Length: 461
Image (cartoon, rainbow, N blue to C red):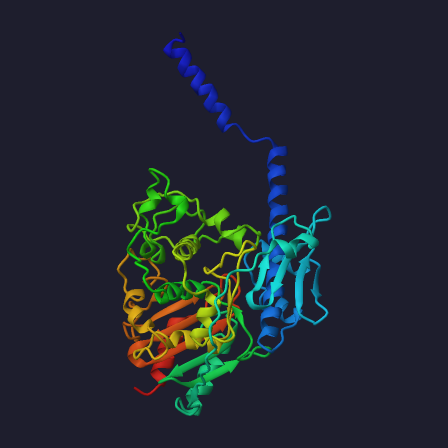
């Protein structure tokens, strides 16, 4: 047997090996792999945005150009993709009838292009890295859809309610830099007493031009769950993969997922989910298997994975409506929910919607519930009953942010908020919905609380 001294020397020697410098060739190899992966992600980002922005606009009867997408959606994005994405060669392939079939983006000489495949009613889905053009179209699965009648709703309009001076002032400040240095507003849409009192768009945008909602989709997901009858959000999710004997994730509830309190680990702040969004991974491959770090319901951690699992739980319980059917029922005529290539809805981010549609969405939560049952769900989603974010100046409900800590704003105000400046602010006590769309560069933020305060101050009580 080894003596204690020899065992200690052997242990120290092993430890020294563990902390020895990594050879330069290994570092260089990892850097090369990371650079190659970044190029693959950037190509996926570009393919999906060109496909979704152009195809979804054309579905709504309007247009976007590649130049416009490069100017807005493909500029000011997160590093290091921002330095890569613009110069990658692309091609847009259309059918004989003129519809986009797919967008391909080149990124490596020894690999196929990255492909975003378009399905007319379902927007675009990103195919996995390495697939060829012939296989990409057949690999992308079509999600299920329920057939419902399309309803019509027209907003009333009171363009003079704010007064011409206040209207002009709000437009100039919102489309300028008063609410954030570097902010880039694309659309404003304000509804008071169910009538439009302010509507304005940047050049190239308009009421039929959709933009990606980013994390506003999380609030849409929460609303979809609220619209599903017979779902007990306080019961365990029932997600099949978590039902193995002894798996502590089996105790997680839908409520905890909606409140970002599952207790599961996430690898980055905000849980960016790049492999799903830009890498062509599926929801199951990326969002399902993260382990617990905290007792469910005890710690707030904003995570895309939690919303994706809440939607998976709903689907596992026989989701009564697909998002597409829900949008038609709820009068969001020009909204498309997109999926991963396996057919899973990416309802943490990948919804394309217009400013008027998002205003209709916000109106679901106003007092009389004339658009459905959502007014009864409002108390739940706007309640800070779970653990709360620290140092943000806002609270969190169930899929919605809470403006319950803001001076000059009614305490019942809550909001759907997304990356690059997507906001749907709901003020039930004032019967007001405020929509602001933008393409704010990374590191720049539009001050939606200040803008909300100014809009409410300009409206008559």
